[in-house]
Length: 325
Image 1: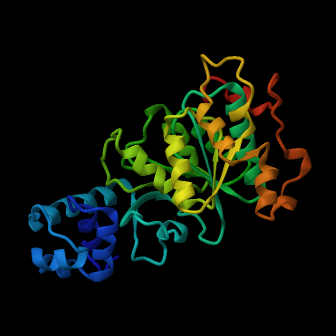
Image 2: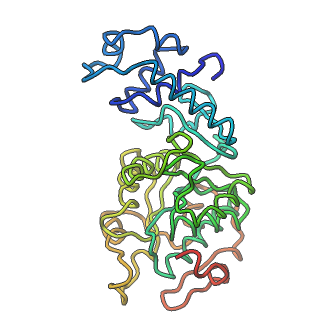
Image 3: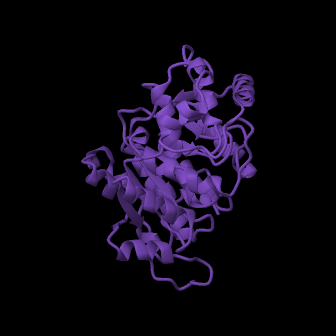
């Protein structure tokens, strides 16, 4: 990004443009001067439509300079869509972020990622299964990508770390503004074990409710397959499932997410139940995913975690009980 100067930071700060339109500008320009010297008519010719208002390029450059300084001070790295280091599967989606901010180590582009997501208020069975599947995937050489939220996301990150993988968290805020704040210790552990925190939002950006649906497209875009463990009908996990289908990713639901509901008032599984009814494959454990990806031999049989609807057959969930949900 050195020869491009502040170009990519400036593009990320442009108002009233979609990510796809920012990518068109990213492809068209090579340095920040290319952008600074363009007129409104030049920009409109690239993106293919009229702008309601043109931005003050000096204000945009000042914001980009501020982002660059904050990133340096806080140990935050950046990777542009223009860079060969940009995650390749994410590059393929319709509206990838023009710039990713990250802490830690970007995922290996040669290794597939599995997204594991679900409700913030899971049943004990679903939390245990998320942990166990993520742990089994790690022992099969698969890192998990999730959203660092309460519940299923946190369980999946912890299980993946426990299995020895470098897990990836995508945030709906700046990577220096971990939300929820109670998951900051987990975020540190992700970094300490070789994983990464990723975001399209600049340093210091606070979590906003509209950031999270956009964040979910990145989770699905990074992954080769998406597992929805347990989710209500209206949920961020269902949004992630729609992105997975749009991006032609594998889509699964966990067996705990379609289990017989004796406690319907407490745990809402209507979202995962509907996905299964619509044809999503039901996953019992990590070996189902590893088998689908021709990697099942990597998982020792003794490490598989079985979930019983009456009794949780894992010791790991007991250890983290009260933290995961």
